[in-house]
Image (cartoon, rainbow, N blue to C red; front, side, top):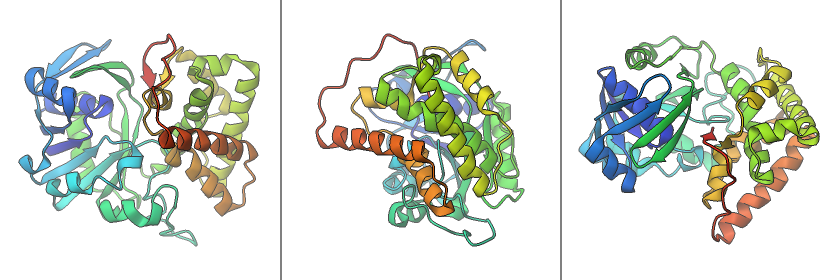
Length: 339
């Protein structure tokens, strides 16, 4: 299978290295010092499962690659609308786009029945810009349960997890998903095909919607948030509101709040990707994680006061950082980031 990884950062380069090791024809799209390292030394993966190095083709010019069978999209969701110039050279008549994103995807109401069929979520797909760049018929959903970080140019540290759940937005069983699954599994990754990926989306979102914004607002790790009585109670409230929104959309994740909190506390003193972005002066990935759920709360008539309050405060922080960027705050003395 011929696969391009657009946005070959921590997750993208890790998956691309595994795919290459499994025999796929992989092309990593990256830039800067990271790209130079990929070209010179390949992708070096440091993992408790075993270190390895892979040498897939790496470039900053997708036109060198041309049309592929699949594009694994490793970009943050806020960059989807603007990725058209990089994506178009990779697209053939049947190319699929496997979008490995956090939060609510732009295709969420594609392929569903009822009054919300085809509904566009403005905070995720503003003005339809993402749908124009990545038509929903190209999209295959992907929920990532792997934790990785960019330890240095060309070096990926893998902490835990090898699962990349995928699924068609319209719940169909497709040959293209089976082909991608086979390529991932040949590289040593887990890639279950879910009949309806929406449950996986909400299970992961239960954690992201709490720990990503709260970690940025408090400059705290997941474990610190869980161990503080007040923020743990806030986390519990936010998760309960998230599950209420999901339930009103007909999704009932089979994971309890207590289990989700316990898992986050066990993760230890890791900073989320959102906190890392804040520390580096980058836009935070909040629209698809938090603002989208507030929009869905409006759509379903769910009160969700805690989610609305955190969305307002975190959104202002993001706006102020973008309007008046300054030197990033010094990082807290803690180990790796988690998505």
